[in-house]
Length: 311
Image 1 (cartoon, rainbow, N blue to C red):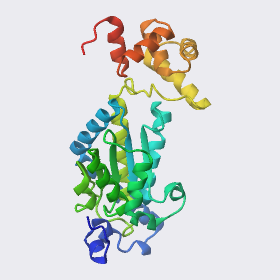
Image 2 (image 1 turned 30 degrees about the vertical axis):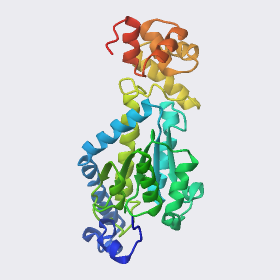
Image 3 (image 1 turned 120 degrees about the horizontal axis):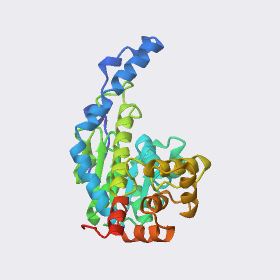
Image 4 (image 1 turned 180 degrees about the horizontal axis):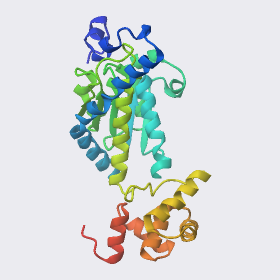
């Protein structure tokens, strides 16, 4: 695929168009500037809403991959790459999963997280090498994130993953994104021109973040990492999370603070196990055994214990 960027290409991209609503923004008061930005931001969730069916299909494939031991890998450049790293890095403490389960690759590597390395996105081969370095395979899911949809680093990796037989998703803010031709799931976020022409860290970045939130959150819910709307598999790695864990045990079971604290300690500081202990009136060993027998959800563990599993 030809990934050379020309001025003609740029002129055709929605993300590079001038926004008539902010054409005189440099002459406005701070209050007026903020109002324009806020008004433009209000349109972003509606752009995401139009893509819910495609997002759902991608989530379904991600869940299937996870159940087979596969991984979710994001790949992007610039703001898009940093958003992928942000979402991936928050999965282990939020859902108690290994740091390898959701990974993110960014053009320019770790240095690109804290400083701009814009030319890194032009290296198509580097995207492929980034996947081979983590031994990306057909059981994994790759999601390419690029507002313009033109980054060779991302496109090269997506084509490589597709040729392996992997599920490939694309998140882009241009209808004619080149990433879409390599994707099974093409998520087009039509947020329109930016407040500052071409500054895709604004509406495009916000829209991408909303979709990434959905991909991992919905997937983890389906895997049983959530009970009701509680993050029962979170890792209590600091004092705030220790107290949050005890509080959610109390919320999930209706027990007293003392009972929640006792179960928390006896469970090995694992909120899901503690919740199961209290709900079923069992010890930690029994709760852990039920967890190992199930596919994840607490409701399934309860059915197993009661002998009414309907799988």
